Length: 189
Ligand code: GAR
Image 1 (tube, rainbow, N blue to C red):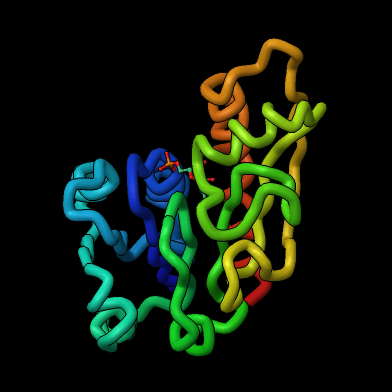
Image 2: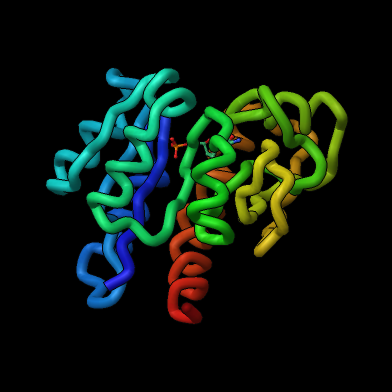
């Protein structure tokens, strides 16, 4: 059994989509949701499906090995970031080399890097009058949004697009493609 941990910071609609997608899968399961915000909606969502949750703070993640200890204890062998807003520390990247992936709500290498998340990404895309945006699924390395790209899918940015409408389009692409990309990666392991 491949055991995935989802790392998320906020609403967790992607997390919920992944939980649902793998719920009856016989070889892959979402074994835990790790979250840096005790008030995040993703925690309620995880609990609805009886998925174990781990809440941690900055100190836990960057100055102790608590998160790593919990990942090992839960026998996690793959990590999917889904709206996780903090930098993954080096020791986790090393322990899970090529086993941590992220979904980014734009076409990297454009509109990535520190501070580029969620709505801010869509605002920048519209501000720059881009004709297209989309999603990028990539491996996580030591820098924000710089790991090797696994998959991209484009969508049109309409002339009257708003950050909200673009976020909706991009979310739809994420729901459709993130689970299947994970499934494909894990079937090859
Ligand atoms: C998603 O669109 C995801 O791509 C983005 O945050 C949103 C989370 O939504 N991630 C980033 O911007 C990471 N740089 P959700 O909490 O509803 O899944």
